[in-house]
Amino acid sequence: MIEVNRKGEVWVFAEQEAGHLSEVPLELLSKGRELADQLGVPLAAVLVGSKVRPLCATLAQHGADLIYLAEDGVLTHYQTASYTRVVCDLITAYKPQICLFGATAIGRDLAPTVASAMKCGLTADCTDLQIGDHTDPQTKEHIAKLLLQIRPAFGGNIIATIVNPHRWPQMATVREGVMRMTVAEAGRTGKTIKFPVNLAGLDLPTEVVESQRRAKKVNLKGARIIVAGGAGVGSRDAFRLIWDLANILGGAVGGSRAAVDLGYVDHDHQVGQTGTTVRPALYICCGVSGAVQHRAGMQESAKILAINIDKDAPIFGVAHYGIVGDLNEVIPRMIKSIRSGASLSDAVTGASKA
Image 1 (cartoon, rainbow, N blue to C red):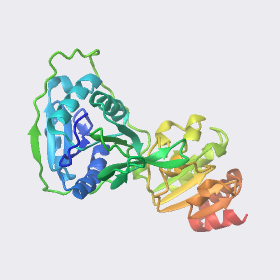
Image 2: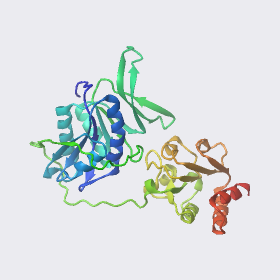
Image 3: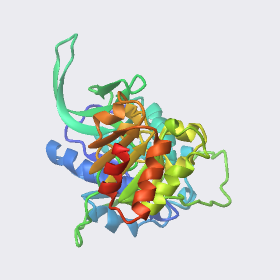
Image 4: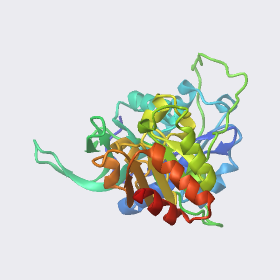
């Protein structure tokens, strides 16, 4: 834990692997820029690795005023102990007031380990971050300009706003795709501060000999049309209808967590709080009930069409268009209409009247 530092910077952990930045830190820099401007403090990126200095320019172009660069051969591959030591040393030295991490495999390992070592709080999987005031309901103490860490809680039944007024830095993880990434500002520069790495006495428990990464099977974030299925599809075989509709529309296939857990579709296709957050031009959800965890990942789609046999399904609460009916009857009609030359809107109208 560090003392409360109102002049402390807003930090974003610049996650990289093999010298390549993931999109998460760039998304977080966009949000961090807003937070830092409201607080009137600099925005900084923390870049840890080996031979990663070329990434500093990208971080600056996405809004970082400062880049803390910690390079060492030992940091070539992510390991919990070494990265935690470096990040904790940086926090102790510069006392930021906010630290943001992506809710990736690395972020979900590193952030809580750092929070534990620093004896401060951490809110995981935030869906929004804001700056606001807080009044303690017991002491009536009013504290201005805290990080409001917003996320679903209690199984998604409520949206909780969590604050950490005393045990700083205020730390949070945010899932990929939740924050919008702004366009890089060409020519924008930042100040790079090389931080001396001190891993003396640290005995790493493992030696990484080789690292291999598998690319995702689908790019949901880049898809303009997504057809998603939920538990209501009924089986992996029946999920073929979702693929067929997506293929004829030139879209991508998504799935709810329930559909993934039931084995209807792979995790790469999962949309929602524990999957990918998407904002396509058209999102067609079939047999998706509309749990808050799923809605959190798709409700910012430009247009939403819901197909569900249950007229009271929560998904209709966020849908722009809805068809109450059996997807096993509705989707084949839509496909048949589209194949016969009908527009999507005509196919939807025809299917809804059948």
